[in-house]
Length: 135
Length: 95
Image (cartoon, each protein chain N blue to C red):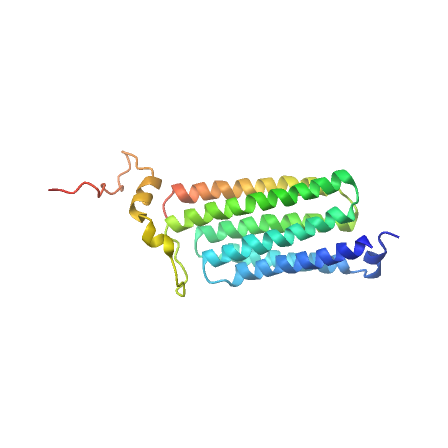
């Protein structure tokens, strides 16, 4: 009886993982690729690990598999958020069909780029700060 | 018997593993031809996550629950690598 659930979870998880890989391969820009990778990949691998947790009925093994599922659900949004933030502020180009970019008009990109670039005094190609107008 | 259903379809886990390896190949193609560095980081993160799934299917097929420990460690390593690459992209210039 439990093998039926194992087979169902294996099939569903494999299809989700294949879907996320096809999305990463086919999507037009970085942000939509991240949309495919993070959500579908996490759900698919969680289904595979849940199938392993059902298949081994042991308490310790199932706890280990559920621990990996909880860990994936905690860390995948954090990693995707950090990659997306770093990519956005280093001007990774968006798809030409993007209709809305609300962060562009609410955020001062020049100031954040200057904050993140860590200006060092011995850096020769560092541009002079533009915030001091010559009167 | 507990394992009767998996024995009814003898090549079931092989088909599952071949499909997962196909998705691994697609992600590896994106890792090779990604136009920017964050594309490659995303592909590398997805490769780590897919490998966790392959390890769990492998543990089911060969009845070895010890392999799930490897899945725990690999999920940790993939997350830490992605965070390190994110800091590298944020601090450095555009590549």
